[in-house]
Length: 365
Image (cartoon, rainbow, N blue to C red):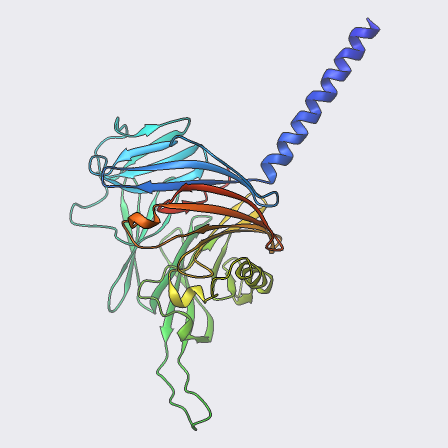
């Protein structure tokens, strides 16, 4: 009896130890989804990245795929690495052409709510119940919230659309109102172009609360033809700043440690560093577990950065190179390598893969 009790204690100890290891592992990893797109279909391959160890476990087979022409998929929202919502024009919630491998698929049909004439070209944000589209016009921006049952639209007319995020049933719309250019006073003092950054909050009842964040933002920092500033965990991130929308009086906060992290990343290769907001689209930001994950071209036009920050400090990063934003991907760039680095830009591992169209971080499970 004593031996049996001792054996039971030993087994419990091993079990608890294993559970503890599993929990630690899950807290120190980030799930990624590599999207591939050819003329026939779109597919997603799952990868598990440990930023601080530099390991990358990449599946061989897609976890989700669907034909490009048959499903009429409008948007895909990953609410975790194993659960996805697919928004489609089809008048059905079950599409046999969608192939899933170990992933729970929820198909949301927008056939009853999306007018046939309306094409939500700029999808600014998604949740597992709705897509949020921004229709940018000369005089105003139309924000459309589209669910399976209806489409609600709101007019924003106090600035040019910059970004959108959703939290706690509120829709946060960031706009910029450009001021007239001020010519230089002397040959030694350059002229200035500034804008007001404004936060419009669309409340659950449809009313709009407007808050001016700043009247003196450098307008040259937002020169992209189509701007969609990323939103994650209650903040917009752009130009070395973040805007916390939960504050009573929202203001721009310098992300000094994140900027320092990007400077460290730029030392990992011989690529010439450049300012991403001047050369291409803004990186995406996603909160995943303990990490804030940034994905975008942050060094040069031939790489893609995947950076993980913990408590605003760089925890580790990966570089996909060569990489290109040209679509379809040219034949000479269809294969690439993921190089992983620690927080000091020391290279750890290298993984050759087929070049993905994009890399996605799902919502935390």
